[in-house]
Length: 171
Image (cartoon, rainbow, N blue to C red; front, side, top):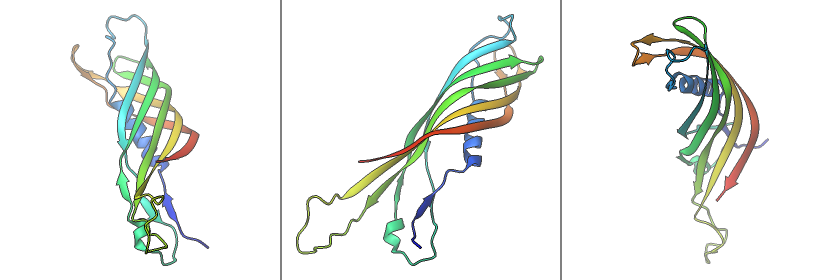
């Protein structure tokens, strides 16, 4: 058996991120000026994503391998939102979103096998960026309240994520 680093982004975390993102959407359309119960909109977010590293082996491993300098990765989400006013205070929302999530790891302290000479081809550090790209379909229920100019929409729901691609870049 071998040892290694097991990096996981749990489904629960992704659902929570998606749900919180949808509940924070601001409505730019005045629902009193529109006769239809249907509304369509665009949403987007710019985020910083972090990760956790977990050792998945019982073997003794040098700790320097796991002294990883976690760096936040710039992530984003873009979506098309569709909303339907069920009643005076209730809104049902869905849509289609593209999300790029992931993390960055910088590995340092490379050791040369020949201690007498320094090999210029050995880098001081290697930065790896890992991407998880998803197509997501949310289903949310919102309760709206407030005055005509300012209103609030807390909501709850679920989001189904479909992994479209997984890749990493080394620099």
